[in-house]
Image (cartoon, rainbow, N blue to C red; front, side, top):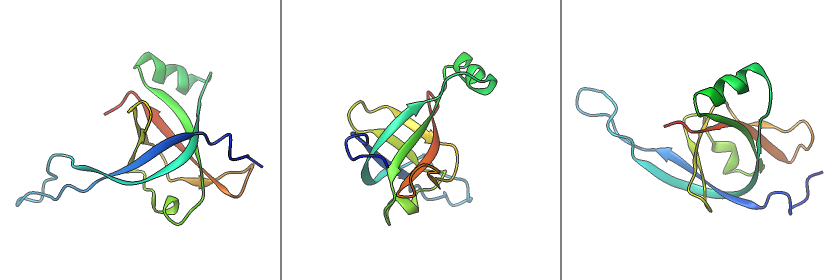
Length: 114
């Protein structure tokens, strides 16, 4: 079981709410805050994929947060912002329940991307 002290950073979930233009093409991104959660980032180390990502200045990591009604609405098209540093992370997969603690969600995120 993960204690509350381990989830000690605040993260804001943002969603692009831009409307398509009259031709149906997406407009400029309009990222809006959806909600803020407590969580923990574990940066990945080793492995061919991780090394390749680092060569392109990307940093894959796992974000762990508590399951809530809001957290279950997170989409891979959303992004995560570290509330303390302002660093942005793209979500690379649908959040899934942790194998170690059924009260937590985990998702693959990636820093250094736009």
